[in-house]
Image (cartoon, rainbow, N blue to C red; front, side, top):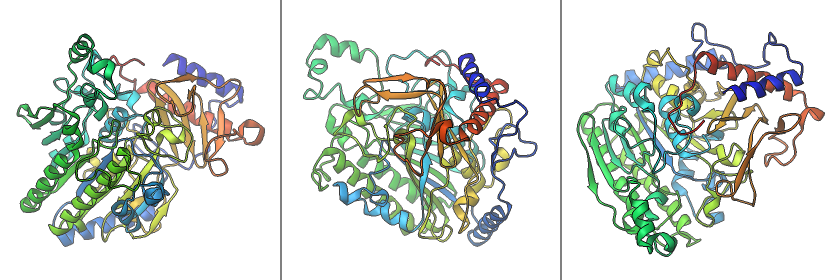
Amino acid sequence: MKKILFFLFLVINLFKIEAQVTPLSKAKPIEGKENLQPAIPNPAQDKIAADMLAALKKKTGKMPNIVWFVIDDMGFGDPGCYGGGASIGAATPNIDRLAKEGLKLTSTYSQPTCTPTRSAILTGRIPYRTGLTRPILAGDKLTKNPWADEISLPTLLSGAGYKTVLSGKWHVGELEGMRPTEIGFDEWLGWYAAEKEITQSFDKRRYPDLVLDTFKLAAYNKLDAGRDLMFGTKGGKIITKKVTTSTDDIAEGDQTLKKYSLEKIKEFAKSGKPFFLEHAFMKVHADNFASKEFEGKSASKYPYKDDVVEVDAIIGELVAELEKDGLLENTFIFITSDNGPQEDSWPDGGYTPFHGGKGTAWEGGTRVPGIAYWKGMIKPGRESAELFDLMDLFNTSLNIAGISNKIPTDRYIDGIDQTSFLLADNGLSNRDRVFTWVEGKFSSIRMFEYKEYFQFTNAETDMMNIDYSYTGQPGLAPWLFNLYIDPKERMPVGHRLNAWTAVMAAEAKGHAATFKKYPPKDIGLGQ
């Protein structure tokens, strides 16, 4: 932390910005809420959204339901509505339809990797604050349980009468006290880890040096990485539902999760209670193995593309079930990916038109699909390039549930309530900046059309953002890009062309100051 603050101090002095200068931002601190990320005041659209929610509650007599579809490692350019789809060998008609009938966001930001994103959306907090700065891997020895003093979204929703269910991948801790039903979910069916962490001990074609060497395989298995399908309920034991014995089990994994989510939706409809369902796909994280039903169903015929087609089909089925059960008009749906594509696993990986991929703060690593759909509430055919951070789902979901007053006041919350942005016909984002941390390093700020880097992760060879990468720090000045004229981040405009380098350095200083008052946690993952 001291190194980060020192570096920012140097940046500020380099551009002679005095401490008392007010950053040139549209966002304003919320009165009496110094622990909240400043937001842009939009009172007129806030009233519109509030009136819409009040009218819906009067009509239905119930609080709205919330459904998230979180796809693993899907690239910005994979769905057809973002330029991919059939044109790159994997049609996505269901995702495309929901984008057309809802709001397509083209500047949605995740964290660089999966564990940080999955924790951030459930806490509304930058992972450096919670300590969940990178994926928890087999063999990691945590020094403390990061969830012990966190307040999760499912905990708050459950307390407000919601049924909270996670269907699918967790990857945010499998030790006691860190499991889904121990941090707020009422019920969970899924896997702790990512596909590759499970299948690599079975796949002798891809990993012969591991699978066919009894000593190495035994050593790997001693790490005791969770690889089986698990099931648990709040207050009860988490049990092994099905032992994973082959890659076929994972190939059919998302079909198992689909059946579970379909069952839960039917139960929700019968109970009449509001619900929060996070359907977290195992796919399309490498290593991809096509389900029997979808093998060869993509035009590409590659497993990754077949799995994109499967994910799209499952979203279509689950949304159809919501409609069949009369729940669609009272359900807020959001579709996204937990980070950019893992380019290292090519051709078993997704596509992004931007620079970089998973593991980096570059646009390719953190700019992801974001589709908001709510029949009768979100005007069809909307598209917006204004900023949305996936952490905003925390605050937004609490507002939709009518419990914004439950947002914690004893810690810093980086999410922003974006309800009015999503619901008002011509809604504007309540956010004008996004901060990105790569593990324990403060890496970049996106503000308006500008992106400034204080740290970077570069690939030694094309598309090797994880396996053959290095981190570094810009030299005499931060690197500033104008994403409107250079979306691939190829040529910094810097102080030679744009004074925003200095303005954003001031914003960086303000952001860093929040960590002084609200110190980050170190849970043993390295900072």
